Image 1: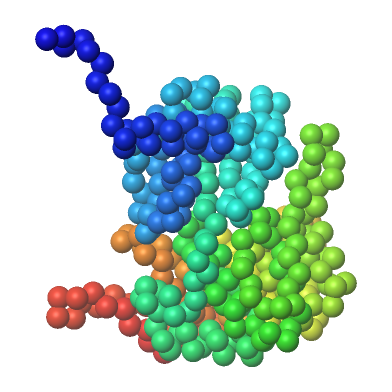
Image 2 (image 1 turned 180 degrees about the vertical axis):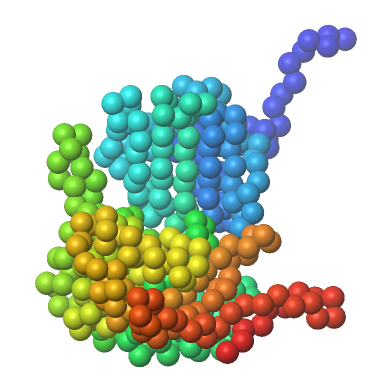
Length: 350
């Protein structure tokens, strides 16, 4: 008996090998099965041997790996070439949107010390609704009714939250309450919003080319949107000088505007807007600036990704006005954790 005799590959094994070859030739190699897994919301690559995904709010390591750094770099080159970009030592970072709407960020050596890194935020194929948020216990029915009334009533709403807290998803759901007869202009760094109304104009920023020219910023787009006769302006995330033009729009008849901001509390959100004015070189006393903010923003909604991985709306605050130099606000809703009959439930208090 010859123990060295080669065993034939099984049918399942053959299919698996063929699929791997197809992924390498036509797809994105080891990332392809993860991109096809609808339960995966984020794909995070930390060098060739460490590939993580986020499922249902929790990170987990996968068995998928790259052969070596060269293999990973080849896949990164394939990703960025699809969007007409390049990545090399002269330009070692790329932030772009894939054809399916997913956002990708890649960074290579020498900036990424331990090997190339890739972060992919998957585009949500299934558009979530307020009913989904209620089913996930992300907010209470009373909060949902308040939000719907606030959006249809043309209040200016700022959605605040940390990274991965669900700000963009929440913005998309809120935007769904805008009446269908309104002209909506959306402004994003990477187009993610999926508005269903018939009269929507989507605008997306553009990075500078290799010569450092041609950049179109969010501020450029906000300024331009004011000439487009919008009924509602929706900004994916306020990060810098565009805050000046956003507040100007809110204070000059463009009610019902919606935007998100990276902040951990409603008070932090207002402070960040104030800091953005300083970044833009705006020369105004603190009191006058805060007065502008207080008159422009009506409601701040706080999102949070909690320890169990779930994203919840933890606070809704109304901006009341000014007392001296301080913006005053009232917390209309707040989530509280209470243990009832061995179950953790969330209550929203008015």
